[in-house]
Image (cartoon, each protein chain N blue to C red):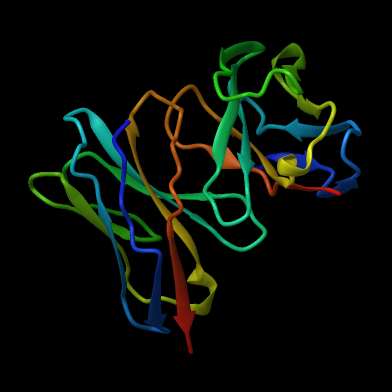
Length: 110
Length: 112
Protein backbone atom coordinates (compact mmCIF):
# COMPACT_ATOMS: atom_id res chain seq x y z
CA UNK A 1 0.00 0.00 0.00
CA UNK A 2 1.08 3.57 -0.70
CA UNK A 3 2.32 5.71 2.14
CA UNK A 4 0.65 8.95 3.20
CA UNK A 5 1.90 12.22 4.66
CA UNK A 6 -0.27 14.33 6.94
CA UNK A 7 0.42 17.38 9.12
CA UNK A 8 0.98 16.47 12.75
CA UNK A 9 -1.64 18.84 14.12
CA UNK A 10 -4.18 21.46 13.14
CA UNK A 11 -6.56 23.81 14.89
CA UNK A 12 -9.98 24.89 13.74
CA UNK A 13 -12.56 27.30 15.14
CA UNK A 14 -15.91 25.84 16.10
CA UNK A 15 -18.47 26.29 13.33
CA UNK A 16 -15.84 26.78 10.64
CA UNK A 17 -14.85 24.25 8.00
CA UNK A 18 -11.92 22.00 8.86
CA UNK A 19 -9.77 21.08 5.86
CA UNK A 20 -7.38 18.21 6.52
CA UNK A 21 -4.80 17.54 3.78
CA UNK A 22 -3.14 14.26 2.88
CA UNK A 23 -0.37 13.56 0.38
CA UNK A 24 -0.21 10.15 -1.26
CA UNK A 25 2.06 10.71 -4.24
CA UNK A 26 2.82 7.01 -4.79
CA UNK A 27 -0.80 5.86 -4.88
CA UNK A 28 -1.52 3.26 -7.56
CA UNK A 29 -4.48 3.32 -9.92
CA UNK A 30 -6.61 0.81 -8.04
CA UNK A 31 -5.93 2.06 -4.51
CA UNK A 32 -8.64 3.91 -2.62
CA UNK A 33 -8.24 6.79 -0.18
CA UNK A 34 -9.82 6.10 3.22
CA UNK A 35 -10.28 8.41 6.17
CA UNK A 36 -10.76 7.30 9.76
CA UNK A 37 -10.78 9.30 12.95
CA UNK A 38 -10.04 8.37 16.54
CA UNK A 39 -11.58 10.28 19.38
CA UNK A 40 -9.72 10.07 22.69
CA UNK A 41 -10.08 6.67 24.41
CA UNK A 42 -12.11 5.20 21.55
CA UNK A 43 -11.33 2.95 18.61
CA UNK A 44 -10.96 4.44 15.12
CA UNK A 45 -14.17 5.30 13.29
CA UNK A 46 -14.68 5.12 9.53
CA UNK A 47 -15.49 8.47 7.91
CA UNK A 48 -15.39 8.19 4.13
CA UNK A 49 -13.51 6.71 1.20
CA UNK A 50 -13.08 7.39 -2.51
CA UNK A 51 -11.20 6.38 -5.64
CA UNK A 52 -11.02 9.44 -7.88
CA UNK A 53 -14.30 11.27 -7.72
CA UNK A 54 -15.19 13.60 -4.90
CA UNK A 55 -17.38 11.99 -2.27
CA UNK A 56 -19.76 13.35 0.34
CA UNK A 57 -21.68 11.74 3.17
CA UNK A 58 -23.34 12.91 6.35
CA UNK A 59 -20.03 13.27 8.13
CA UNK A 60 -17.67 14.83 5.63
CA UNK A 61 -16.58 15.49 2.06
CA UNK A 62 -13.53 14.03 0.37
CA UNK A 63 -11.82 15.97 -2.40
CA UNK A 64 -9.26 14.03 -4.44
CA UNK A 65 -7.01 15.88 -6.87
CA UNK A 66 -7.15 14.95 -10.53
CA UNK A 67 -3.71 13.31 -10.42
CA UNK A 68 -4.80 11.49 -7.22
CA UNK A 69 -1.56 12.42 -5.47
CA UNK A 70 -3.31 14.27 -2.68
CA UNK A 71 -6.69 14.65 -1.05
CA UNK A 72 -8.50 16.82 1.47
CA UNK A 73 -11.05 15.79 4.06
CA UNK A 74 -13.54 18.55 4.76
CA UNK A 75 -15.66 18.79 7.89
CA UNK A 76 -18.03 21.57 6.81
CA UNK A 77 -19.04 22.87 10.25
CA UNK A 78 -16.62 21.60 12.86
CA UNK A 79 -17.88 21.07 16.40
CA UNK A 80 -15.99 20.43 19.62
CA UNK A 81 -16.87 16.74 19.27
CA UNK A 82 -14.83 16.60 16.05
CA UNK A 83 -11.63 16.98 18.08
CA UNK A 84 -9.77 13.77 17.26
CA UNK A 85 -6.84 12.24 15.39
CA UNK A 86 -7.65 11.88 11.69
CA UNK A 87 -5.97 9.14 9.66
CA UNK A 88 -5.61 9.11 5.89
CA UNK A 89 -4.97 5.62 4.49
CA UNK A 90 -4.59 4.34 0.96
CA UNK A 91 -5.35 0.73 0.26
CA UNK A 92 -6.79 -1.68 -2.21
CA UNK A 93 -10.55 -2.04 -1.87
CA UNK A 94 -10.42 -5.69 -0.89
CA UNK A 95 -7.20 -5.50 1.11
CA UNK A 96 -8.12 -5.22 4.75
CA UNK A 97 -4.56 -4.58 5.92
CA UNK A 98 -4.78 -0.89 6.72
CA UNK A 99 -1.46 0.83 7.47
CA UNK A 100 -2.14 3.68 9.87
CA UNK A 101 0.36 6.51 10.12
CA UNK A 102 0.48 8.96 13.01
CA UNK A 103 -2.44 10.98 11.58
CA UNK A 104 -3.38 14.64 12.14
CA UNK A 105 -4.49 15.74 15.56
CA UNK A 106 -7.36 18.18 14.95
CA UNK A 107 -8.35 20.44 17.81
CA UNK A 108 -11.61 22.34 17.44
CA UNK A 109 -11.62 25.42 19.63
CA UNK A 110 -14.61 27.41 20.88
CA UNK B 1 -26.77 -2.78 15.75
CA UNK B 2 -24.40 -3.68 18.57
CA UNK B 3 -20.76 -2.73 18.04
CA UNK B 4 -17.56 -4.63 18.62
CA UNK B 5 -17.23 -5.58 22.28
CA UNK B 6 -13.92 -5.94 24.09
CA UNK B 7 -12.96 -6.84 27.62
CA UNK B 8 -11.41 -5.95 29.89
CA UNK B 9 -11.16 -2.22 29.20
CA UNK B 10 -8.08 -1.83 31.37
CA UNK B 11 -5.44 -4.25 32.64
CA UNK B 12 -2.31 -3.72 34.71
CA UNK B 13 0.18 -6.57 35.05
CA UNK B 14 3.80 -7.02 35.96
CA UNK B 15 6.38 -7.99 33.36
CA UNK B 16 6.69 -11.72 32.73
CA UNK B 17 3.04 -12.25 33.66
CA UNK B 18 0.42 -13.47 31.20
CA UNK B 19 -2.67 -11.63 30.01
CA UNK B 20 -5.61 -12.36 27.71
CA UNK B 21 -8.01 -10.06 25.89
CA UNK B 22 -11.42 -10.97 24.53
CA UNK B 23 -13.28 -9.65 21.50
CA UNK B 24 -16.83 -10.21 20.29
CA UNK B 25 -17.24 -8.87 16.73
CA UNK B 26 -20.36 -7.51 15.09
CA UNK B 27 -22.73 -10.34 14.26
CA UNK B 28 -22.20 -11.69 10.79
CA UNK B 29 -18.79 -10.10 10.20
CA UNK B 30 -16.50 -12.70 8.74
CA UNK B 31 -13.24 -10.84 9.22
CA UNK B 32 -11.71 -10.01 12.59
CA UNK B 33 -8.54 -8.06 13.33
CA UNK B 34 -6.33 -7.35 16.31
CA UNK B 35 -4.30 -4.16 16.36
CA UNK B 36 -1.71 -2.81 18.77
CA UNK B 37 -1.63 0.94 19.34
CA UNK B 38 1.31 2.36 21.21
CA UNK B 39 0.82 5.82 22.71
CA UNK B 40 1.23 8.54 20.08
CA UNK B 41 1.19 6.15 17.13
CA UNK B 42 -1.44 4.81 14.78
CA UNK B 43 -2.76 1.26 15.20
CA UNK B 44 -0.59 -1.56 13.88
CA UNK B 45 -2.17 -4.76 12.59
CA UNK B 46 -1.16 -7.85 14.56
CA UNK B 47 -3.37 -10.54 13.08
CA UNK B 48 -6.32 -10.92 10.72
CA UNK B 49 -8.83 -13.79 10.74
CA UNK B 50 -11.25 -14.75 7.99
CA UNK B 51 -13.92 -16.80 9.77
CA UNK B 52 -11.74 -18.99 12.02
CA UNK B 53 -8.69 -19.11 9.73
CA UNK B 54 -5.65 -16.83 9.95
CA UNK B 55 -5.21 -14.61 6.88
CA UNK B 56 -2.24 -12.54 8.02
CA UNK B 57 -0.14 -12.81 11.16
CA UNK B 58 3.10 -11.48 9.73
CA UNK B 59 3.39 -8.73 12.35
CA UNK B 60 2.45 -10.86 15.35
CA UNK B 61 5.42 -11.52 17.70
CA UNK B 62 4.78 -15.24 17.79
CA UNK B 63 7.28 -15.96 20.53
CA UNK B 64 4.98 -14.31 23.05
CA UNK B 65 1.69 -13.43 21.34
CA UNK B 66 -1.00 -15.87 20.30
CA UNK B 67 -4.55 -15.47 19.07
CA UNK B 68 -7.44 -17.70 18.23
CA UNK B 69 -10.93 -17.28 16.92
CA UNK B 70 -13.29 -19.94 18.14
CA UNK B 71 -16.02 -21.10 15.76
CA UNK B 72 -15.42 -18.03 13.62
CA UNK B 73 -17.00 -15.66 16.13
CA UNK B 74 -15.28 -14.54 19.38
CA UNK B 75 -11.54 -14.13 19.56
CA UNK B 76 -8.89 -14.01 22.26
CA UNK B 77 -5.43 -12.46 22.12
CA UNK B 78 -2.86 -13.67 24.65
CA UNK B 79 0.53 -12.36 25.67
CA UNK B 80 2.84 -14.70 27.56
CA UNK B 81 5.15 -13.50 29.03
CA UNK B 82 4.52 -9.75 28.86
CA UNK B 83 7.31 -7.21 28.42
CA UNK B 84 7.36 -3.53 29.29
CA UNK B 85 7.17 -2.61 25.57
CA UNK B 86 3.83 -4.43 25.29
CA UNK B 87 2.16 -1.54 27.12
CA UNK B 88 -0.38 -0.30 24.58
CA UNK B 89 -4.04 -0.26 23.63
CA UNK B 90 -5.15 -3.47 21.95
CA UNK B 91 -7.94 -2.86 19.47
CA UNK B 92 -10.23 -5.42 17.93
CA UNK B 93 -12.06 -4.68 14.70
CA UNK B 94 -14.42 -6.58 12.44
CA UNK B 95 -15.71 -6.16 8.92
CA UNK B 96 -17.85 -7.85 6.34
CA UNK B 97 -15.81 -9.58 3.67
CA UNK B 98 -14.45 -6.28 2.41
CA UNK B 99 -14.74 -2.51 2.91
CA UNK B 100 -14.61 -0.53 6.14
CA UNK B 101 -13.62 -1.91 9.52
CA UNK B 102 -15.53 -1.35 12.74
CA UNK B 103 -13.42 -0.96 15.84
CA UNK B 104 -14.10 -1.77 19.45
CA UNK B 105 -13.14 0.56 22.33
CA UNK B 106 -9.87 -1.25 22.99
CA UNK B 107 -8.13 -2.68 26.04
CA UNK B 108 -5.47 -0.51 27.63
CA UNK B 109 -2.62 -2.70 28.90
CA UNK B 110 -0.01 -1.38 31.29
CA UNK B 111 2.98 -3.59 32.01
CA UNK B 112 5.01 -2.55 35.07
